[in-house]
Amino acid sequence: MSAAPDVRLTMPARPEGVAVVRQALAGMADALDFDAAVLADMKMAVSEACTNVVVHAYADSEGVLEVDMIAEDAGLTIRVRDHGSGIQPQVTQSREVPALGLGLPLIAALSDSFELQGRAGRGTEVRMTFLYARESDPAAANPVTGSVGDDGRWDSDATRGTPAG
Amino acid sequence: MDANPIVLDDAAGDVVVVVVEGEHDIYTAPALRDRLDEAIGRGGGIVVDLTGATFVDSSVLGALLDARRRALEADQGFVVCVGDSVEPGVQRILDITGLVPILPVVSGRDAAIDAARATPNGAGG
Image (cartoon, rainbow over the protein chains, first blue to last red):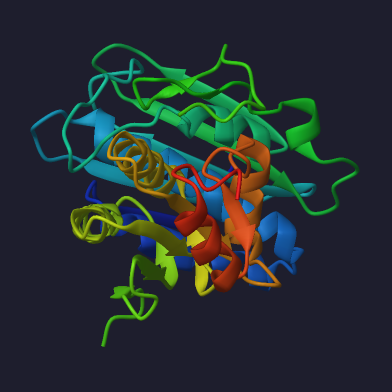
């Protein structure tokens, strides 16, 4: 059912790979004549999806990050996949890879459609589509709610507007 | 030569400016945290200048929010600034997360330095 990818990237799931994915994506979006604002959303959402793989998918072991880019009739679909432990992001307290917890809310707000699939022990796939011609801003339909909590992580129930300090 | 430099500028004296240029994400966030630690360690106000930044993700926001919290706990001003025109890869994430008033983010380095100097949280001055 899935279309064959026009571009498939497979690389170690390491922090330095995320910028490589953005570069490839920028080239693909340029060839498809995407608006700069949509490209910016795309780069952000895909970076967040890749970062989730790097931070959460493989715990202390090595693993791969796979990214497919598929040019379809209405837009560009990007699949970001791992073969790690499954969907539940762990709270990471490491100073090197602290998790704010904003990744999935950002992906939902920035993509025109978004799907998350995963099964325990069989990896996770985030599938995002970005339309060539947007009729509305997806962030209006799926806004990022909440604000940063006292613990430094994103609290989706927090009220905005009052700088806490 | 680093295409995505993070350097400290202490020309303002009591306020140190962390100048962030290029693209920043999970890979460069640890270096940003180190520079922010260094800036906080100097004891004065802190400005993070994103004028030359072209992309920042939630890893960067996490580093900024953490530094802000520690700066405020130490009674040091903390302010982020952008230029007159802001790259979509920076503006968008600030807009949709609602962090502009919280970090806070102001336009122009001079205004940010004044704000970081004026009040511990930078928002009132």
